Image 1 (cartoon, helix red, strand yellow):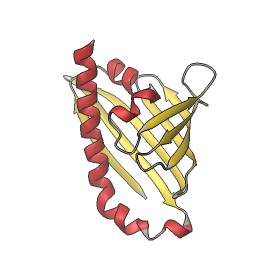
Image 2 (cartoon, rainbow, N blue to C red):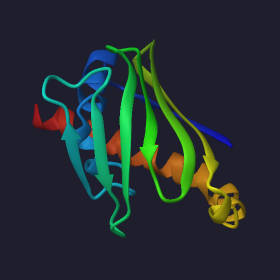
Image 3 (cartoon, rainbow, N blue to C red):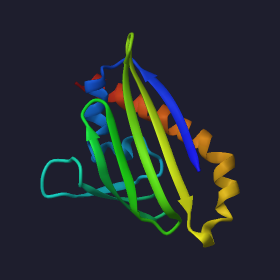
Length: 146
């Protein structure tokens, strides 16, 4: 299953990248993330693993597999009780007056979680768009603090 949403913000790609590339910022805008633990001995980049905990307590672990500064961030799911596979991508494009952020998620369910497919189909497009709206507000708040 593939879902995608876009958002345009009045910030440079570099500023957007700086915020998105820091996993500790995820709880500021992603409603499915209450906390983040980064498992990396060095700077965040390809190979960095991040474990997130949802407000419900569900944990998931991801690995960054593409880290192209101010352009593209891609990570894959390593561990989830619901999803068999998942790939998440952020693509940043400069446009007049700001940056277009495209967020795409490709995933498959574990067999026993297939009943969730219908619920996800009905709600995830809107949820992804809503999360991008929260991302836009978090980016603006971050810019106001600078």
